[in-house]
Length: 260
Image (cartoon, rainbow, N blue to C red; front, side, top):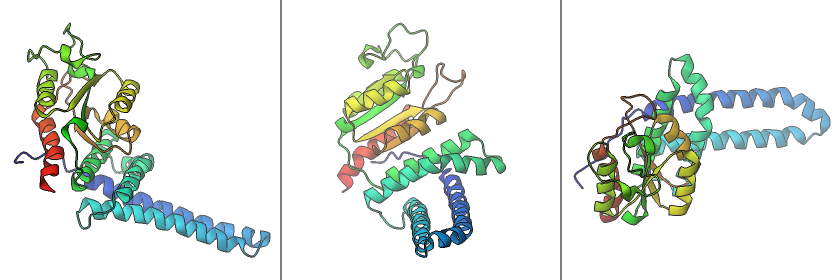
């Protein structure tokens, strides 16, 4: 496939903040081991040893997952899918702490969310998922539809008349062309329910930073390629997206099947 899905390449920001977060957690755990040791010694001679082993294992796991993210993101080694999925979950778990650290350097929540989304996209691309077209789900918010349109597509996307006033028609054409599933949802709860019903192997999701970040975590471990929408009229009102970015994401997921 000639078309390539391009992300914003902001994922190094999240890698850096994640590494700093891991370092801080390591220091805190080391300090806890130090201050707990005298008290544990009085309880039982073996207690400090057990405590040290537990803390050491936790620290090793933290750095193993962090190293996995770095190794995978640079394509140094292709890691086992289970390791990558654990690393993905690790990404979500680190977000609150990484956000606090990022704020010190002037990083906004949306900037960090975008970086996290780009990192997850990057890992999905590098992990070379093999997906049949019918197992790909295009998932979009209803705000992508022209607000004055009388043909509501949240119950049935094929109600769209493809008039060109919004990009729902273009996305429907992509879904028809490649044989993908296509769903327009009104919110996160409905999105989760529809994903369970559709049972996709991969999702191409369109949303804002907040909804993409939370949605990716909600549907874990299903791989998600997130495409950020544009909001020229403000949030949740006549948003837009570049259909060619969505097409490129679908083509890469399908194209990998032919590259193996």
